[in-house]
Length: 132
Image (cartoon, rainbow, N blue to C red; front, top):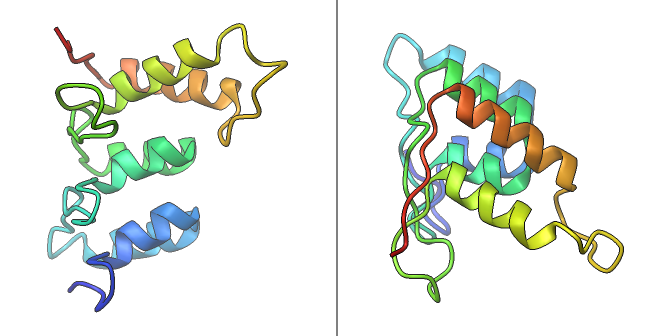
């Protein structure tokens, strides 16, 4: 059931806010019914896994992957870049942007968190998307 505002689902809300234990509870409570891990926050067209990646929440990324989330789900992150991103494409681009600018740039997600998520996504079979 969607929340009445912003077209969010309970899972997208708790993923975005980083409530790991509530993510676990929601998934466990709905395992029998088949929780929809691909149900998107429609205003941004982002699956819960993509939201967790953007927020740098590695433990939630792992929980979602362990429970069947699509490691290669796609979303349009930057409308100035043609095509859709996979979580790995997003992380790879963010790391490229941040390299060499750590002293000048204060990212919302630390570079070491992005690198940790990048390794995890690769281990799970994440693929890069081509923009050309």
